[in-house]
Each structure stands twice: as C-alpha cells, then as structure tokens.
Length: 116
Image (cartoon, rainbow, N blue to C red; front, side, top):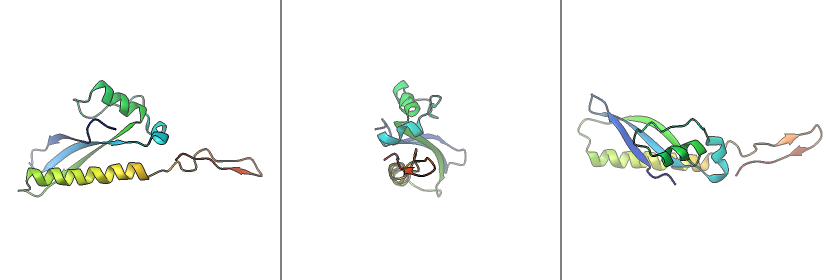
C-alpha cells in the first residue's frame, strides 16, 4: 500500500487551480508492468521507500490538476480529491490490459496465458 494517497503539490496563482499527485496500490501480479527503474515522485517530500515503491511498480503515481469554483471550501476540495482518488485506485485495480499477455500461437495451437 502507498504511504499516502493524495499529495497536493501546488495552488496556482488564480487561487482555484490545484496540482496534485495520487498514489495507488498496483495488484502484485501486474507490478512488473508498472515498474520503471527511473521513476521518481513529482513530490519532493517522497521518501526513498516511496520512490522505490514507484520504481518497483508496487505503487503507481498520477499527476493531475483540478480547478474549483471560487469560494469552494477546503473540506469540499478534500472530499472531491478523495472521490477522485477512490476512482483512480478502482481503475488501477480493475484495469488489466495484460489479461492475455504472453499467449502464443505456434501455427496450429494457441497456448493461452495471462496476468491476473
């Protein structure tokens, strides 16, 4: 599991746009597909362990922005970001483009494999 789920990176000068990072837990069978030895969090406060988890594919990072309506309360922004993170984690958990990865055909027979 990631140490944190949402990290606010900055608030733009307009006062209503926020850039943030989300960390999601990658299913263990798919971590090798997310692995990137050069990965480093966009957040300067990430620990060595955080970056190691990103590099190994155990954790996936997504950077995005939101623009809120002027007057939106901090509580509303927090709730909105939490709902976005929940959807992101669900997407990482459910999406499996590698379900038939490694399946082969030798000219007469298919051998079906995949990653769960």
